[in-house]
Length: 100
Image (cartoon, rainbow, N blue to C red):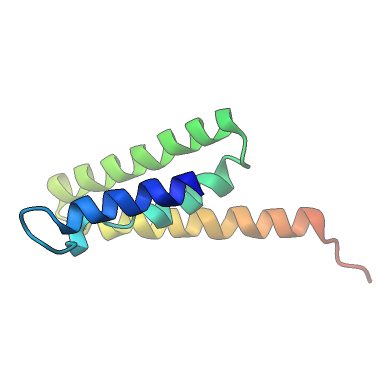
């Protein structure tokens, strides 16, 4: 409840600021990255730190590839999505065995 109140205060301060409205670029996909970090880290504090570093490296690598080779930085996001897909797939196959 306290975290919701603090988030509301942050939203009020953002809206009542100089611009007067929320900007779409205030959070460019950080929520989706947080979901991937939580799944990769297996909700373990040390695992989340390691997964956060891995995702940060993919963001930085995507920017470096974009500037060096002219490839879109969306390639890094595709890699992150595939990473989440494979982690969830492996987790499903580990917990639910197919019976013949």
